[in-house]
Amino acid sequence: MRAIFHGLTATQLKKMWHASPFVPFKIILPGGKAIPVPHSDFLTVSPSGRIAHVWKNGDDYMAIDVFLITALEHDRSAGKRSK
Image (cartoon, rainbow, N blue to C red; front, side, top):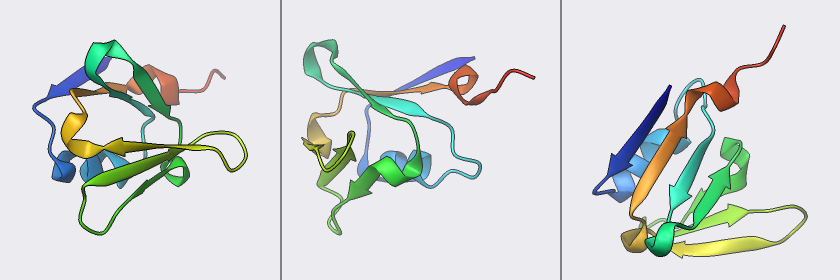
């Protein structure tokens, strides 16, 4: 099941980030670029809620202006494991 949230606010991003249980999602930027957030440990948000950092492998990260996010894509099937 896939849900896409448009008209994003910092509050919506924080809700997905702190969801329990966490479900992996993608941050969609202008032009369609998708930034995966595989686990809540891979995302940090500034105290003001304006800047999000998505951590990649190692110490690399991408800084994102939250106001430029065009959508969040919540893919529930990504969190399911096969038996």
